[in-house]
Image 1 (cartoon, rainbow, N blue to C red):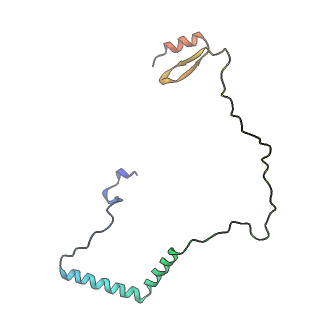
Image 2: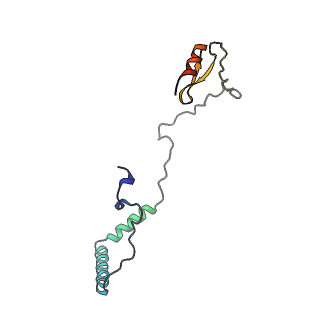
Image 3: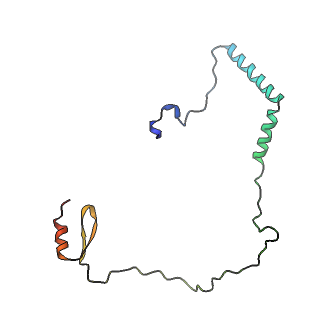
Length: 130
């Protein structure tokens, strides 16, 4: 299914919730109490330390890898052989038609280029309809 057929519930924007508004002061007070009890419960069970460990792991420096060969696998230095190429390389020549069989190039349907080998073919292409 494509995106233009989906409903507004699949919007990629507007996912952040705004400021929480309460109908009464009692609801706001109850919400604050629940939030405080929730943070106390998380601290009691060590959830904050887990978050610290996660942050510490994310803030750690990335591992450094040594890309050399493992011990015992060292090889002798083998020089590359580029001595057979000397100087600049020539570019290939552009191929050109030098024969006499083709009389020309005709245009058929929708700018289609067609080789013409005889006068009969040229007349046939000229009489063709779209």
